[in-house]
Image (cartoon, rainbow, N blue to C red; front, side, top):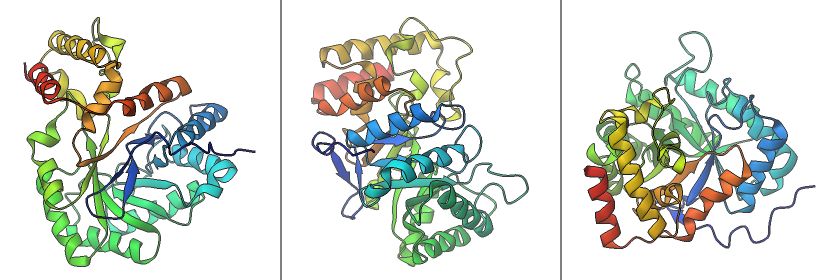
Length: 329
């Protein structure tokens, strides 16, 4: 019978979103495509429990995670029912809806019917009465923001989610929906977006400034750019490397130039006593508006290696300037 490590909160920093009551571990665990129906359940369970034993109390999901839609939520639900249920009050469980989830016109985007049905399915799969954050997974150009906001506000009033968030909304979209959430007094707390050292579009777009101004937080997904920000590709990037749509622009400057930057960053990481991956995670967290970074791992050793990033989150001004010089070259 599983019993959580009694020292689980000793080393993982906890970060608060502005002056709200919403808090996250510096590192959250994402089930995107690592722990769905193509992974042995025993391995998935081992990684998830090891994450919790190391202070990662936030588990991030979505209706379309799997690879088969819903299978990542089902994996979480099995582990929750078997092992984590006694710790529900400690857990932050988040999920999303908006990308393709089922056939037909209501199987994607953010109509009232789509969002309500998606949340019900997610709760059933995960064996939960409520989630801690329900996200709209992407901007819906077809449905009015008013309908979307009223739907999420209703979910909060029904007790099916405690907070709400958006994902993949740019600065302008976030500012517009924030205004409506404030009018409804809906507990809107975070925007989850792709953000890493080589994809800094949320800075260029002004999204981070919008979040700061409205006392909201950023949850950064893809912090290692699908493995680019590790030591795997210091010798070169394969032409057929699969990469998430949000990071494709990172390679537009040419793979040779990116490899040069990776090696320069790796040298700096060594000077800091970190791996490139650990420094990349720590760098995201040097900005207080970033509430958490979402990592995925299919093996315990990968998980534990990345968690070590929190052992050195401090950067000198010279290090920050050096990183900017490398990235802007």
